Length: 433
Ligand code: CMC
Image 1 (cartoon, rainbow, N blue to C red):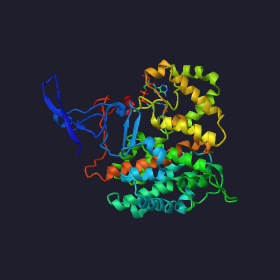
Image 2: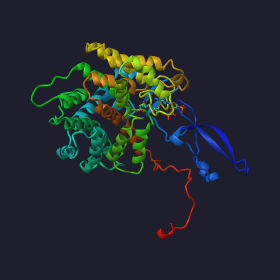
Image 3: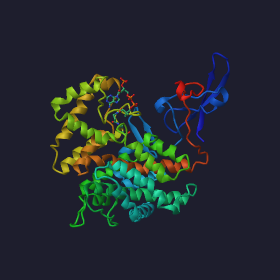
Image 4: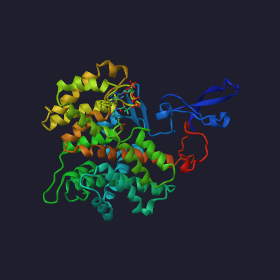
């Protein structure tokens, strides 16, 4: 139970009825008011569209300080994890709560490697899709259908079943994603290879073909690993909240993760990385930036500066800083420092950060602003950008789902509403309307 910090009094000024509300102190961050007694004491619900002021749950997984630009996974700063860790180690950290010993890491790695194949029948699902079906539609559908294949570990109240699920989904999501990509290309599916690490294997399944050998480019694998670390979790974002809400009904975890993939797809969330590249290509050259920003600032025009702004960060998104730095390094290592889209993005950021519209609204580049530049440089096509985000975020979704299900106080998520529709009225027969 979190510690209680202060008492607040709520008084109905019309009736004079009062009640005390208590706030909870987190380990770090602002206090949270416990409004649970409001309904019992006053018959009141709170109204907070978009959850602007609402903490939906208690959690120990990830902490963000949006004003200072701080992001911690289980207490570890994202900058340290990005510099020193690996995606597999970060996935372990998110799920188990502590960094693994060398032995635990080796066991986890081996378990993930050995769960990476998918049931052959699942592969046939892809044939039901047109070659141009968006891969997010494909992976969301295939993940949802996994519950029909892995019956042996679907008891959500059994800790070992949950662990098997966790390893399975983290191991199989790259395979499922690569199968969607190969289906789009019309190329044969490439089976996972157990002698490769997580990112090497992912690249192999995406880019190898059966007719020739494939050698993993270490610069690509390292860049991908970094991007997966940075996208692995972000506390109660829209897709994670979706996983929690779906999971709170007691549905199987594959269905909950599939719901999270669907939520991630939207351009306000994970779909922004794809939209950023589309936007940069539309802008084309530095000369067009002012005209484009004019459209962004015009409230009659629905254009957004994609990859900018964040519900929580009112300062630099620390992930964007790391990715911008990584863009310089990766492009230099690949001998492609003169990347025109990167040049354009840098200039766009510079201009926007001096513009009163963005300054006054505290709009800064977010994780999606530069990620597409790296994905493109390592050969990942635009349609797969959000899929890469989903592969990484699967670790976070699993950690949050586990945290929720293992909480003995778990309740079904069931928000209320401010009803503004018709009051009760009598049915009118059709001839009288
Ligand atoms: N371009 C132009 N104006 C913006 C932008 C933007 N990217 N983002 C916010 N604003 C404006 C918004 O119009 C509003 O202006 P006003 O006060 O005049 O009405 C003000 O800034 C506050 O924005 P908001 O929409 O109320 O903020 P929000 O917290 O509801 O939305 C957001 C956050 C991320 C959905 C939004 O900033 C956005 O749509 N950004 C572009 C899409 C994007 O990059 N999404 C990725 C987010 S990070 C990764 C992830 O979550 O997956």
